[in-house]
Length: 247
Image 1 (spheres, rainbow, N blue to C red):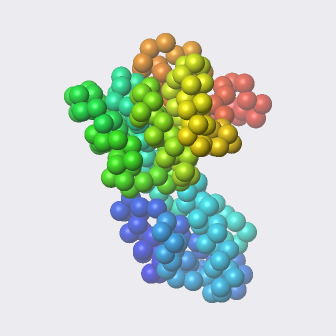
Image 2 (tube, rainbow, N blue to C red):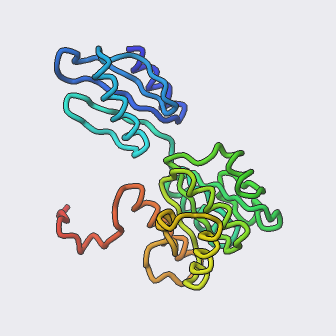
């Protein structure tokens, strides 16, 4: 039961891990805890089965879902999703609010101290007044469950964020900007050595097409896309889904 107890402790600490339980076969009832840093506790009874379990665990703990895979049940615990918002602009204020309401952890990053204030963005979990590289180091870097919304429209900030993000494997990269601004950004990033294929990883313009007019509505469109991406959905209308169910 040590692996089970450790898994419960990780969950209480708002950490990330997976508990794999064999529910069939000769090793039924055995448990293996796999931590996000690769640490393990327990065994399912064999090296081959443990290796299979570890592969499933690392996939699902970052996808943030529990699943039955054959004779293995993978139970996942994970912290609330982390949203890094670059640019302490008006959109960031509304987006941070919506993120907190929906249970996400929003952080706002901007080196411009006159904009990055608690008075302007009261719902940010933390406001980091630093350039992107220093801010990311302070916040522990970018992992596979990190979502980034780049909103400043200042090339000095946005380009640095995007270059750093494209070197990592975040869950999502979104960037605000008009068609003209996006074209100019694309040329700058290509000139800086970013590969064409990597540019396709940026969701730009950020958000779903809700017909948003105000800053608050634009933030809603961004939050809607974030939720859709997190759950592997396209953001279409439920009434137009062919597989909809009547509740």
